[in-house]
Amino acid sequence: MHRIRLLTRIIRLLLTLIPAEHGYKLKEESASYDVSLTDLLDNPPMP
Image (cartoon, rainbow, N blue to C red; front, top):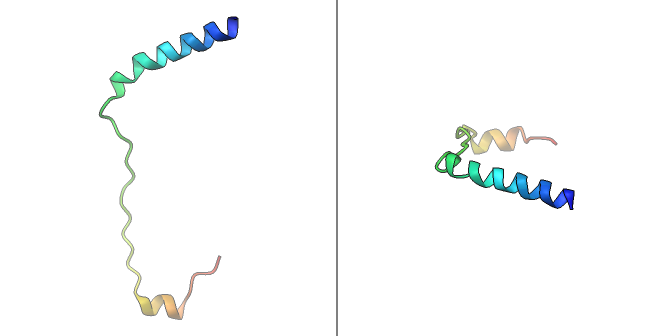
């Protein structure tokens, strides 16, 4: 019973935080790749 009450309390606290974070997104910077086909054919990447 204690575990259920604890989980319920955690869920309620998380639900109150969600509206505060609404509209905030984590975003990675876009990477630019400058690789030509001849470079790939001459020097293939090795795992």
